[in-house]
Amino acid sequence: MSFIVTKDIERLLKPETWIRMVADVAIVNLSLFVGLAVDYLIRGPLGVAGFQGHLQAFGKWWWALTLIALPTFALFGFYTRGRAYRGRYKVLVVFQAAAVANLIFAFCSYLAPASAHFPAPAILFTAVVMGFALATARLWAYFLGKVDAAKNEPNFTKAVVSATEPASVVVIGGAGYIGSALLSKLLDRGHHVRLVDTFMYGKEPIRKILDHPNLEIIEADFRQIDIIVQAMRDRDAVIHLGGIVGDPACALDEEFTIEVNLLATKMIAECAKGFGIKRFVFASTCSVYGASDEILDEHSYLNPVSLYARSKIASEKVLKQLTDESFRPTILRFGTVFGLSGRTRFDLVVNLLTAKALVDRKITVFGEDQWRPFVHVDDAALAVATALSEPLETVGAETFNVGSNSQNMTLGDVGRMIKRLVPEAELIVSGSDSDRRNYRVDFSKIENRLRYKARWTVEMGVKQVMEAFAEGLVRDYNADEYSNVKVLTERSSDFIKTDGAYLRALVEGDPNDDFLTQKSSLQ
Image (cartoon, rainbow, N blue to C red; front, side):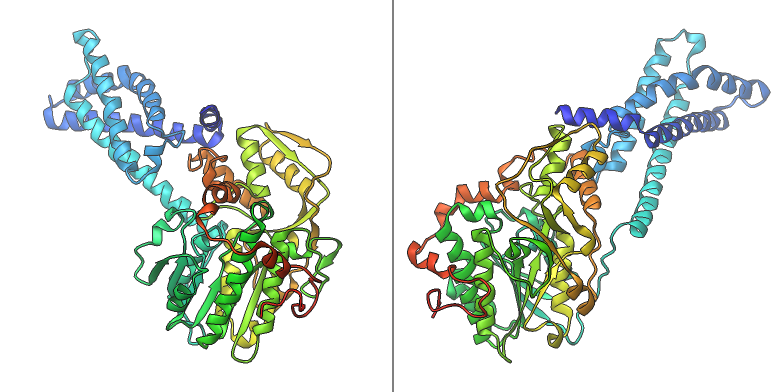
């Protein structure tokens, strides 16, 4: 609550807020003058004396209406972006504010001596004119803002599925962080999407598209082979985003992680191949590179330092084993993701540090010299859509790092950037971190081969999170819904687990072998 109040005060002190207030003062007084003029034309008396009387009324009362109107508008959220004022009923709220201001004005006029009363009908005319003028000004500002945003914000152009693109797609695990950003892109392009998801994080992340005519939902566990067989029928491509994501979440239960991340991937890929589906896009991670002082590309030595990375490497090996002319999967290794999507996370470093800066007024950075390759969640989704749209000859049986060379940054760089954007927050650098990951990644391949270019910078993502807090879209960044670990802690007991010793063997061995060793064979 204190954060919201503080942000309201900060908005009131901004120059653009004062400009809006000055504009509103002009509208209020113009409305008062027009209201008097209408009253004069309708009621009279005609002649110089009547006109002068109305001018005198304006001169006596304009300041009072101004002093009443501005605080009233502020209480209705005009200058602090109150929830009602931001919503779909914004125009109605504007008219309500105008009506309340004029009612208070009428009451003040009533309390004045009879000789000084403001013409009552003129108050009604003023209220009507004021409401329309304020609403028109805000609609016009909204339109100009949209035009400006279209020029300056990332522009994701809608298109139509080309003849070379798969028309029908199965998306496994599409209601999560990246999936909720991806689905709308696929639907906008005209793809028919069949979504398979347990909705562990609920359906709120995809609420806006739930009724889309090209979206079919199968609410089920994607480890069930009968469900996957049902989902694969009449499909042209598969996008596999499902899995336990992140080192802390994977560490909660190793057997469960391997079952979900590896065994399910193998089964899904085999089903896709069995149905003759050549296109298979798999979500992997740059965490497979682990720790290195070199700039790494898709051929670099793999040095995983977590179960999450090992499970992804093992899954990549499975896909390579299955690859032939009839099945040509594409592996996308995402950088460290940040930003907002339908299912936002605050267990990711950029989002978390920004939230802490805004709410706790502290930016605590562990391991400031550690490098990470950052990529916005929307750019991650864009990479998946791009891989789906490119000819199979270009993306089939290929691995691509997903991100931008310019967004390789140290954690210290991120902390200092957030400090610059939230200067009132304290930057605390706290030595080394138990997280041993440290890697810079080269993204030239995806940029050159697929003409892919990330649209978002880390700074833009930080500002996006800041705006979400400012508008009240995020209330408690510590809520369970924003954390993979917290959700899994609550729900992992709902799922069946298999033999632990067997599963652990699946991810052992040299991660750089071209194929799985006999010890970790899945046959």
